[in-house]
Amino acid sequence: MAKFTLRQLELFAQLPKHQTLSSAAQSLHMSDSALSHAITELETAVGEQLCVRRKARGMYLTPAGTHFASRASEILRATDSLAGELSEVSGELRGPVSLVCYTGLASNVLPAVLEGIARLHPEVEIRITVGDHSDLLPALADGSLDVAVVYDIGLPATLQRSVV
Image (cartoon, rainbow, N blue to C red; front, side, top):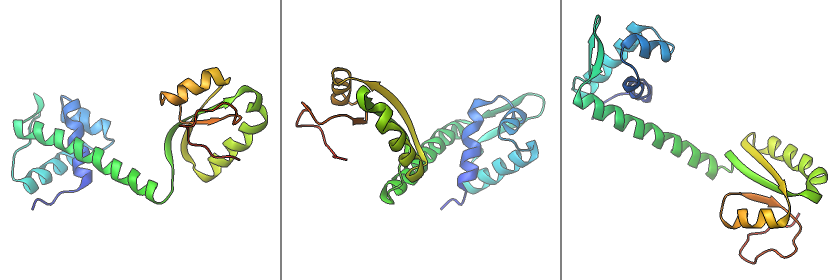
């Protein structure tokens, strides 16, 4: 079993975006020698040459390196997803939420709602839209909006509701 770190995967996954090791190192806020050392350790761990480094002519990935960088990116996305899933299990919400509010309720209700969400779920990014039922209901139905603060009058039975 190959022994390498997520940090090495993060570094290597960035290499295809650069033509030189110096450019990659600068982008990653590290020295050329530290990046080169991390790549060498990674190559030793996997038993393959992943990158050809030439001082005067830049660097390029070997076919194995190109495949490895692609898979490393997939693994990093999966680890981000796993961390997100854990936060969902623990009840911690994060990410963008499209919140809409009926015009007549906005000035009275939104300040308290926004304050409460910010306090309870600081990782949530709220996008607010204010409008009337004719604007809000179709957007809720098609999934382009996540949450609506509206009067419970004439709402389709298919909508999940929470009365506050």
